[in-house]
Image (cartoon, rainbow, N blue to C red; front, side):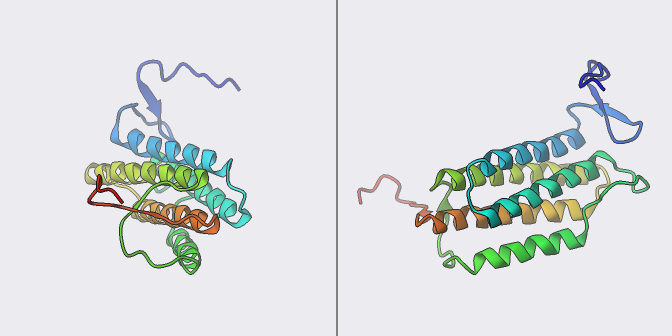
Length: 184
């Protein structure tokens, strides 16, 4: 099978099934941002040595792929892996587990720290964009509501993963300084 089909040369793309939509449609923007988040997580994973964190991120990547497929196939009759409440529960369990290692937050933090944490924080911000796109899509088209909830939890989990990576490396979170240019 060839990678190119030429069917998208007119500015449209196929959803799972026979429907074709414009490449700038809200649906394509939504699952395109999920794909971008997935790729950013792949970069993060390439610099992460912690096996438990790598497994969490791999599971997130698989879930993002399922969420994208879910959005790409609006018909509930299609036989594909949908995002379910069990996925959300697993994300929440991972958040709770990692948060036990961390000191509670008392201020806003700046993304960064270690290279791995910075990559995860970038992935989180892309995930938030995907979430905003999914919200816009949900105002005009039907979506599986579990996709939106799961993407929200994924961004929360990525935030906690970023903090965990810094903590394990002995790096403190950088606290947002509203004074900015004050000399310390």
